[in-house]
Amino acid sequence: MPRFQALALTTASAFALIASPALAQSNDPQFETFAPSANPNTDKIDYSVWDEAMKNLVVSMGPSLRETAGSPPQSYGSRRQYGHVSRYRLEGTRLLFSFLDAEVKASFGEYRRDLEATADTVDIQSLSRNEQLAYWINLHNVAMIEKISDEWPVRQPRTIKVDGVPLDDAKFITVEGIALSPRDIREKIVYANWKSPIVIYGFWRGEIGGPSIQREAYNADNVGRLLERGARDFVNSLRGTQKSGNTLQVSEFFEEAAPFYFKNFDTDLRAHLTQFADTETSSLLAETSKVDAVISEPDIADLAGGAREPTFQNIETADGRQQSFRIPQSMGVLLAQREQKFQKIIREGRTGTVTFSNIMLPGDPKDKDKDEVE
Image 1 (tube, one colour):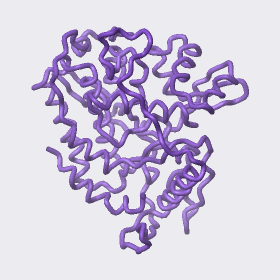
Image 2 (cartoon, one colour):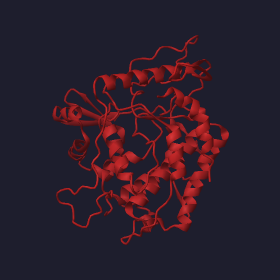
Image 3 (cartoon, helix red, strand yellow):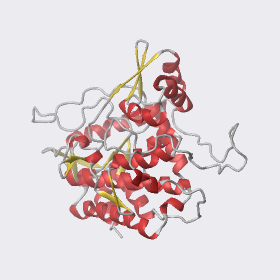
């Protein structure tokens, strides 16, 4: 198994500072083999190794306050701007790519191949729908992290190519002898066989402008909860929804999923957003009559901005003792801004979330698996 324990050691100092029926069938018949079985079994896949990795690799920037982050100061002694300049840099989650050594990076590829091999010993299509969904989300995200870490430092993951093919369309994943790209997993397997658009929030694209990656591995028991968390985070963020005059501006990722989930784009998307909208976002929906998918931020969702900065600063632990561990100055600024944001959240009493599960909704069949993502 991959040695993700090394990941915990590599990032420990950094954390000292951080207190149903198919909707759109594929035209390619080879993907029909991945349609979920009508008679699922009770087998499960253990993702504890990846769960450990996520807890050590992912940093949350906290919930969106719908406030644009101002322009960061220029890096000391340089006219070049290092670190993140995105107006969305205080939203979502970040990965600690800059702290990873060669051994940890290699373990991502090793784990991706382990997941591929799992399909040779476990009948993926005969697992429960939640178990299958967790498998495909984890495989997709492991593969994305693997290739981005191989290319880091990189400012925008969408510029990465694998053997000359853009990362999202590169068929470097093999399951049951079928070559798959990240896009294939999303669109030809999951979107084609799951009718709830909530699944779009599980797939991490490596970009600030996309849905967040979670600090847990997905599994059959938590996939519904994590997808709802991701949906609420994204829908109620600046990178998900904004208002411009009479127009509701939304992320380009909603337009990408439109052929599968939002065929009548304005009406279907508004109905979807309403399910997860908080009070402020609900006002945006009520005050607009048009929808335009124009929000985009392709910058990498890491802490360093996809670049190696030549200037560093020492960091201090919570007890005020200075450590020999150093981080780039721009990262120090970003983490300080993150701390200021968290203090504001506490002062304004915005802390706490409530998650409902194991409940029946009107219209649900009596034999429905209460936690199943449809």
